[in-house]
Length: 306
Image (cartoon, rainbow, N blue to C red; front, side):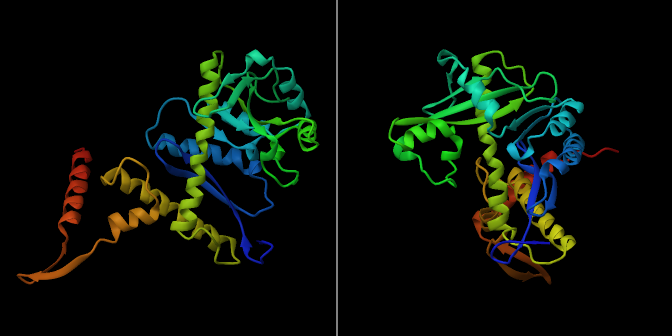
């Protein structure tokens, strides 16, 4: 059992999230000191099994941040016939590779004004054949960078370049991010598209935000790991139920949070009335229309085999 600096029981949820369907496929509750890369290969297998059982076909693309940067994780993905995009921690080898990129080889990023991407002549050692690394750079003015070593943005700038800016020698500096992939990225458009899709992976953060504020995953209630694991799965199940309800109920094209789904679909006002010795709920007209439309969608999708 691990406790935070506040004395609260702490845990870290590692989840595999199906991006297109917007549901959780597999998850593990680890303590704050556990390495997610150790558990990732098994979680990858469970996620593949779940997505195949749901009827998905084709090649599966795994995306993850640098917390899952490990050759064994990439190897497990490739062994299952998949593709990967995994964040790469910044290191000396990457800074050297970035310095070797010709200025003309940088291309504009998609939907990110001022950002550029490039394919590096670098691949991490002992990774699957065909692994390549893509870099993204964003130019910042000196006043946008901090000398605080805990500054997230400043940590993305090379130490030498950051020192020049902080000393007033340079007015601007580039911040960099990297990811490794085994995709065939030969065209500029393919490189930019891959980086854009990985950047949109931040939608997975909505999963944790939604379960924290809408399903009680903001805290763990027990000193027992088993109890806390059940609590985690209750929150994740609420997240999936919210997604499934939104597939059926016409409450908009954008994904709604659990609290909104609860208000629009579940917490509907109604009166209990009795007619001919039968009890039934009488909803407001708007709610009756919503329920009727949802039931019609369910009935249209039902297929019976005899």
